[in-house]
Image (cartoon, one colour):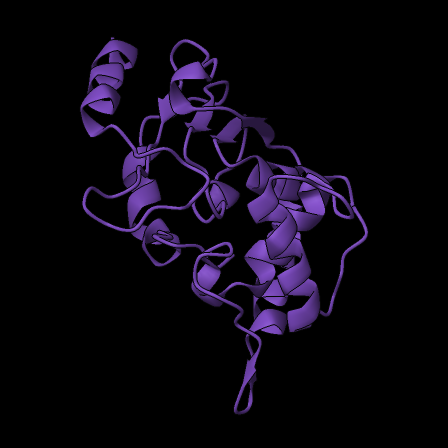
Length: 192
């Protein structure tokens, strides 16, 4: 999935380092799973979480084989974005708001970058849908959770990969301002 800050192109370089000493029964955990662009290339026991409830609803819905909207015209995108902004799901559930928002938003920015649509000879929505559907088989057995990183129950001895929001850059609207100092304190605690 195209996702702001994705590490998809670095996975082949990162994973051999991260998984070097992993044992067969050891969990691999991503508390900031985003577009699943690293965890979808990991085998074995996996736990993923994110604080964006629409993102986690999207991944869980894909695991369950939910019916998908394969064409997202601007009118439908606008309707879903308005419901997302009102924080009231009148016509759409969390999965559908997530699906439309991530598939239809410019550059994978989830209603933050405007509608991507079609430009010249490219259909950006169709590309995003195709790319995301390629991941479905690889995420089928991931245990997804909607929570903040510091609320996630991490099994003892797990390998934990954190791709946090970058300091000083645009963050998603679904998050409070990310507290980097608090995060590093949590890292010190968890690593013990």
